[in-house]
Length: 295
Figure: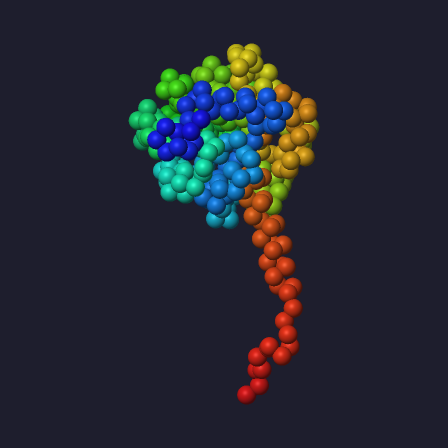
């Protein structure tokens, strides 16, 4: 289903993206969506066979060596960062798979209908609600809710995307959020069970167990299914770091795949660079080639 103007992929219509995902499942394969904060990440994620690439503003911080939670902080314009990564780094190098734009729907400075038109015009094939306030809790979450930056704006953004025939793949952290996203028209729901463990900047004590992650994920799925039965569900975050972890969740829940950001992009870089650098440092040097330090 090539783009009529470029002969390549993006942008795809909502129907085309869904057809591609269901085709993956019909082959007995899981749906794998991957975050890309750089063009080279996107290029080789595509070569690895991912079904979707998602652009998060957190990808820029993650690939700069900082925790993904930086994407939730006021360290830059989240919408502008995602748009820039897509326009100048990812969309120019991706050959065929759909690229999804992370949208900070609660940004009070944006008219969402206007911003989603820009997302479409840039060539993205859908939206994701990131940064998302669904993963913020406690007193701060209550403050956001009471001061005009509520999660309801994320639901409204997804409803608007559906009206515009724009594919949506969305994060939720609670069953009631899954119901609201289902009612808004979300196509794919990602059960977000927390910041990812592992590596140099992953969480440790903040993570739940895999069993708890499976239980939370299925509760989210059950809530979404109480509204509609045509939504696809994916797992993400917390202790779900490796392919084996993602398989554990797939086997114990109704998820049909996994979304990896830190677990794919960051972890692929961390250990491979350590190992490769160590290999280079172990190459032999002829003693006769060394430079004398004597005067």
